[in-house]
Length: 134
Image (cartoon, rainbow, N blue to C red):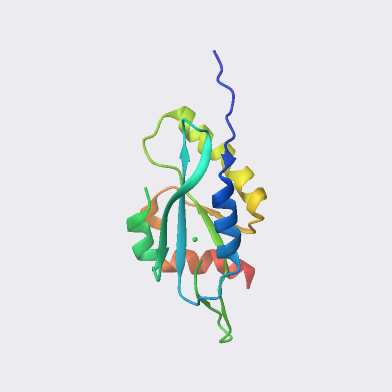
């Protein structure tokens, strides 16, 4: 028996929070951690973090980053870093993967990165990924 892919909707409050986050005026690193509520089939807010480094964020994981360009410019790119929980059931892995695209489209995200192991989330890794956006 083949299970069909479940694509979760995005909680309306989370959509608003992410849009507000995208245009925030603060200059510190911040992150919004999301998760899937399997019963409701909904992407929801899990945690919010202010003034957090990538190294500290990896300790919080089961996205915004101050980026210093080589020419001295500073930007604050909004990054979506996708990671699904290690060890969850295959159907839930599929739910995460299938819902990622819907979330990216709904919130109009452009800098989307996937990471398999949260230990790999380092300042160096993020700088390398953002380097492509100059």
